[in-house]
Length: 434
Ligand SMILES: C[S@@+](CC[C@H](N)C(=O)[O-])C[C@H]1O[C@@H](n2cnc3c(N)ncnc32)[C@H](O)[C@@H]1O
Image (cartoon, rainbow, N blue to C red; front, side, top):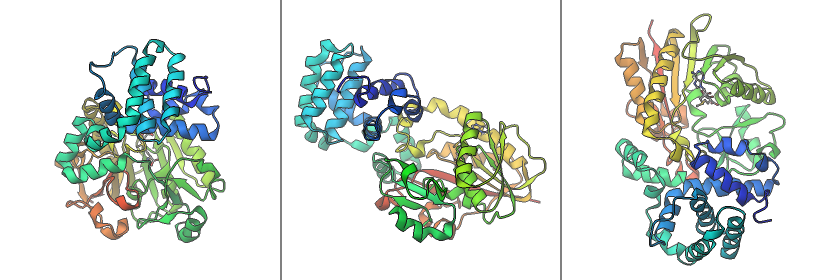
């Protein structure tokens, strides 16, 4: 019932405030809500899509609403702006019939401190229903939906056309990518899962959403969810069967699973106990094993130097905006110095854990050069006994466009755009001298 505590739109209003007003990450807000857990699958799917769309299209939505008012909207109560955002997302992007979007928004206003604004809400949403198409046609969607600081940095790094194409991909719902435990069975699983096989080997189903646990092969642990780009860095270590590999910053364990499935003896190091438990849970379902170590990887040392180290460092996550649309709103340039300092400390430790002749792969899901090649330049510039070993196109499904002039992996959301795009990832492979 509209406005009832179990109404997905009402829950969405509270959750949007948690993200935008209180800075809570989108996934955490959804996972921590008892109301959401109690919803039927269909309502839960709608709520997730409504919130994700509102966050992805926030710039366009706010500009559309602002274009209809003579004077700026009152800043208080903050729920007024949020309620209009949810109504606008339904009208402009989700194809909700106007009468339903307007009447449910008004019912919601009735249950909040918004009764006095019902006339304004009604008038604005009705105008959006009538004029929305023309307003959208006049907007620069890519620019409006990315914070200016991020737009400027991406244009400086990649040029305007790839930035535009990448933002366009990130405005959509992501496909569902799966990594198979037994890579040799790809064709049979692709048929069972109604998925396509990407050049890089991942299986892709057209759109995420729905219950992944109900898909064939989930219960028996035949695959795990992992974006096709996220599946590439671990492969750059090369053959690891029977070898000891440290996976630093390992949760939730997508790369640990890849390495264990390839026959490596994996030591998965993760600082968060709760997230380490998720690795254990995921490995159990997959029937895979790894040594799990709860430790700060800036201080962890292996009992003896290792032939392989993978460091998937914490970062701004700007390459994963379509999965984590809150990132564009919650991260700011102010977060970068602490992140890059942590990446430097982790890289130094990772290099120290490596035996002479050993291979280190450094990866982040960031689009920012500060968190990618600039960290490697700093490490090498300080005289670390490491040398780049360039990535070859055959290692990434023959997709030469994913490799930089220096020989690093750099996926952009616009790569493979016609097939749904990729998350943005960076990876560099280094060998220790000696
Ligand atoms: C980008 S995620 C890793 C994703 C993971 N490699 C995968 O493929 O599933 C970063 C992880 O690093 C962990 N982390 C952050 N700082 C850390 C530290 N100092 N030592 C170890 N883990 C850390 C975070 O808790 C988070 O789980």
